[in-house]
Amino acid sequence: MRLLPLIAVMVIAVSCGSAAESYLGPKMPSVGYRYLDLVTEDDFDDPGVWRSFDGGADLYMNAEDGVYLIRVNKRQYVWVQSPSRLQDSIIEAEVRQLSDFDHNAFGIACRLDMGNSGRGYYFLIGGDGYYTIRWSNGRSLDDIVQARPSDAINRGRAANRIRAVCIEDYLALWINGRFVAEARDQRAAHGAVGLAAAMNYQGRSLEVSFDNLRIWDAALD
Image 1: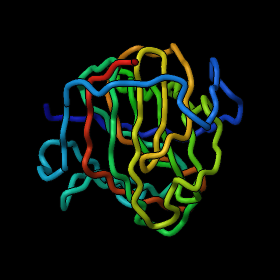
Image 2: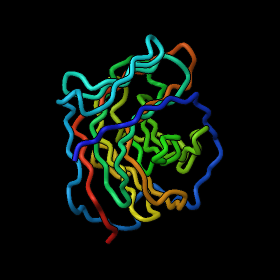
Image 3: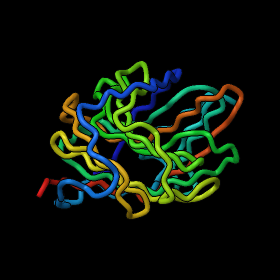
Image 4: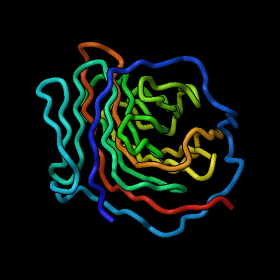
């Protein structure tokens, strides 16, 4: 299955308060999970599959040269999402920061609102070595797991492999093969998969590429 995404942009408002129903801790995952059927495999070699957007200096999003590229040049968060609705899934992608300013966020999203409001779960890392799991109500990115540092993240202009687990009410984040966070949340049971980037500093820029996107149906053990 190929993804034909929608594109949206929103001024970013980041809340420092926790909206998690329960945060379970970073040491070991509390449950196991199983990969089932491979639903999507996309190396972004076909530029016609993913939609593009050219907003001039402020925003550029496009599949080119075998990656999906997002360039953000002002304070906002952006996402590009698929029109396919999924429920229990595991999403993996390689993300690479191409810009120099490290205080940013980028990653993948699951269970995004099919109306393209931005509502859904975001699994984000930053070039400064921090990770977070966030919920968006369509207006702001609010903490499920507050931003924390991890040495699992390759900092700066580097590549990282992100795995997001969205099964039943269970959410988990793995970075470069290492488990870093999990939580339980029931606000969305299904929705689209997305790629996301965020800049919280006016006048700063973020450029990030996405490659080797894989999505599986999944179940808890």
